[in-house]
Each structure stands twice: as structure tokens, then as C-alpha cells.
Length: 111
Length: 336
Image (cartoon, rainbow over all chains, first blue to last red; front, side):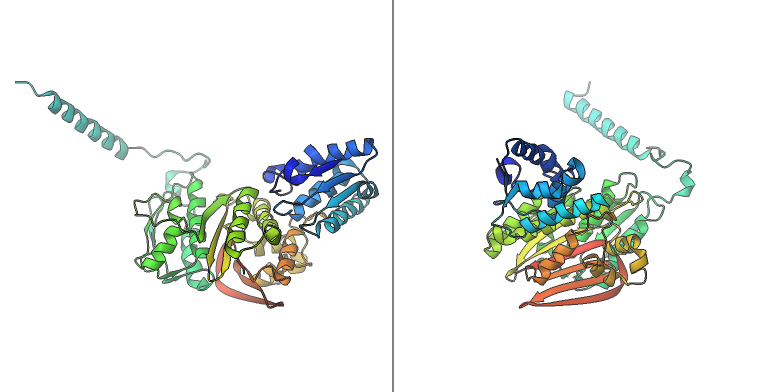
């Protein structure tokens, strides 16, 4: 199961929330990410997410997309990190940031 | 002997024109929507102000004088006045930088968008040919009605754009401009798209509040000159310094504006929202400067100016204060 963000969503990801502007992290998460993620889990597959070819991902976009899986969809950090594979040759900071946001979201949720 | 058809038609046109002119001048004052419990005597109307801009019209290089001129306009706007006329006199301007032009457009445009105030703006272009060319090539005239003869569009300038929300497409155009002028690949300027989206988002979320007279709009401009691309991003809102102080008073209550600006980009600052999952954006921008991705990153807000520079791997920070307070925030970003 794969998401190629450049083709399935946008080459120019935006900000955090839908009301802030187009191609937001919230839009990506709710329209594409959660569906493919659940489908992958059902099929006992890992979800590959390809970030390459885009013009760059704001921190707010990444945090809302992946941290939001914990906050909004009550996924656990371990489950998310075990079931996604991040492809990002253009920006090597993305895997670390996604992991950080997922863990931080779980930590904040558990407080 | 009757009049000819042409004479009848000409007389009729004259009468209609006269009637329209009379109707216009006898137009009654109406209560302004949204302002109740007030009388006409509460307001001064139809005042005229002449604002003369300095020879060196630049926020970066001549902040005190330039910001002082802007404040003459803004201070009048924030008084309880309607229907004022401002004449923006650029006749003597000889050197101009785009930060000043963009800020001027921002004030005028944001005020004009607020139709309750009914302020009018007019003005002139500089007599100095170089300065005049800068005005026109920046897209300045796109924001005003003008019968001025236009210069051909410059390939070295992206005309001023504005918006209220996060606009990835405009950010992308800026990135592509940098890629073209600085011979960089898309991968090389990922940091710029991130920066611009953060700034646009911050403007929408934090820069303005409901009490303000100006519309909540950001402005952006890019120029290729002297082997670098300069990007100007600005808003005319509360100002980053004021926002930081307001949200974190227990930590930053005694700091000056330049220190507050720097605090917004540092680890000390919690997000303006106070939420734990927020507040990463400005810290990331500072990291880009430290890594040398930006040659200069200057922020002017309130009475403070914070200049972050990276020269041959060495990072320096210069904070300074000025007397005149800038409303909003101006970012001046250089990429080499």
C-alpha cells in the first residue's frame, strides 16, 4: 500500500488546518492518510508514504498529519511507527520529525 | 423653425450630465453601517494629509524616517476619523528598497479594504528615474489607479502578491524564482517553501485581531539583484514582538522589542496558542539561518530589529532598537 504525496495529494503541501488554506495537513490526514492507513492495517501490510518531489513540508503540516493520527484517531505511537515506511530522499529530516510528532502527541495525550 | 435632431440630442446630454453632477454634490451623509450610538458631530470628516517620503525610502537602511512617515498615516487611521484624504508624496525619493514599497502598499491596501473608513489615497511617483523604475517594476501601480506610462516587466522581480491564508502556490512561485535565478534545484530550496508557509500561517493565526482597522493580509515580493535573491514578507498587524510579550509575559515582560523578536525564534518561546504540539515553525527558520541556508534574515517589528546572519559558516546576531515603532512585522530574507 502506498501514498505518493506529489501525485495523490499535492506538490505544494500547505499549512495545518483546512481553514488556513489549501492542501493542509488536516486535509491530507482526513482525506487520504487515515483511509490508506486503515486499509493497510486490514490487509496486514505496511503503508509506504513517499514525500519526494514536493516543494517542502511545513512543520505544522507534518505535525497535524501524523500527530493528529494520535490526537484525532486515537492511534498509538508504536502502532503508527511500526506500520508506516517513510520514503524521503529529498529531505532527510522528515522521518525524524514524523517520529517526534507522533511520540510527542502520545505524550501530550497521556498527560 | 425647430431645432435639428443633433441639437436636441446635444441639449439632452448636457441636461443629463448637469443633473448627475447636481445629484452627486447633494448626496446626503448617511450613518455608517456598524457604527451606532454616535452622531455626525463625533467624527471629523474630509481631512487632508500630505505625507512626504524621505530621499532614502527604506525600512532597512533608513528605518526611523521611513517608519515615521508610515506612522503619520497609521496614527490618523487609528483616531476616530472617517473620509480622510492622504496624498503620498514620493517626488523626492531617490533611493528606495522594496521593503518600504511593500509596506506602503500594505497599509494603503489594508485600509482601503476596510470600506467603513472611506479613506482616499492619491500620490505621485518619484522624479528620480531609478527610483521611479523601482516603484513600477515592483507592481506598485497594480494597487492603484494610474495613467502612468508603464515600464516593461522586469525578469529580475516578482511583483508584489498578497493573501489572507496560507498560499502554497504563491510560495511555490517564489521558490521557482529562486531556483531559476540562483541555479538551484527543487531539493535545494525545500527550506524556503517551509519558511514561507510558516510565515503565511502565522500571519493568519497571530498577526491580527478583531479590534484592528486593517484587513488581515500578508504581502510578499522577491527581487534578484547583486547575485542574491531578496524576499520581503510582511503584515501590518500586531507585530511579532507584541504577540510574544502578550502570550509569555511572565518570561518576557521586561525584554525590549528586538529581544522579543529573537525570543520568538528561540527555544524559550512557547507557541502563541500555548498548545504543546505547536510552535516549531519559527525555531526551524532560525535553524535554517544557522545552517547557512539564508545569508541574512532580518525581522523588523515594533521598535526592534533583529538581524540573523550566516557568513562563511559563522552565525551572528545583531539586535537593535529604533524610536519609531513599526506596526506589524517585516521580514527581509536574503538567499545567495
